[in-house]
Image (cartoon, rainbow, N blue to C red; front, side, top):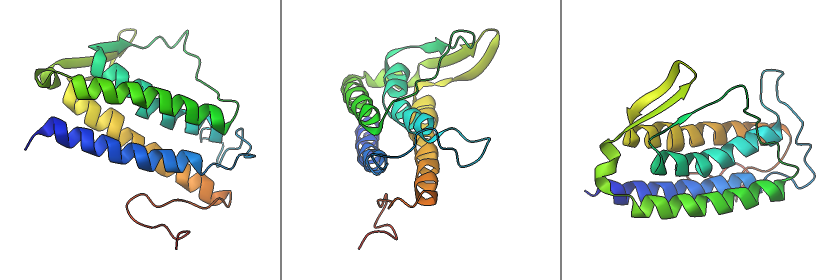
Length: 166
């Protein structure tokens, strides 16, 4: 089995499902809405899903790590669904190119994310991609589906039809 081919296929499948979920956000949705005071806003959650699939994937595949600066970090707050879809499409296109061209020997390279003197992630690029790109994406996509369901929006199927489909 070629692990890289399998990861490419899995990533492609998850991108199709993720784009369907992002596209199911109603055009007139209030992106400032929160399911709970501890939750992200709908807009921030959608942005995080798009970033995890795209920019986070690019960084995981093309860099040896990130030094996360909490003092200067400003979360992306999209103005509308179209902005989320545009960023998702652009960034995942880049991530797919990097993934397809990645030297298979690079999967074993160490990848580290720090915030000041704290180490947040310290693992192989493979584990970081599986956990912090794919699994993390699926986790937050599910939260987005929960929020959309709460708002009454129809939910597309991810691994088969949803209760809202046919």
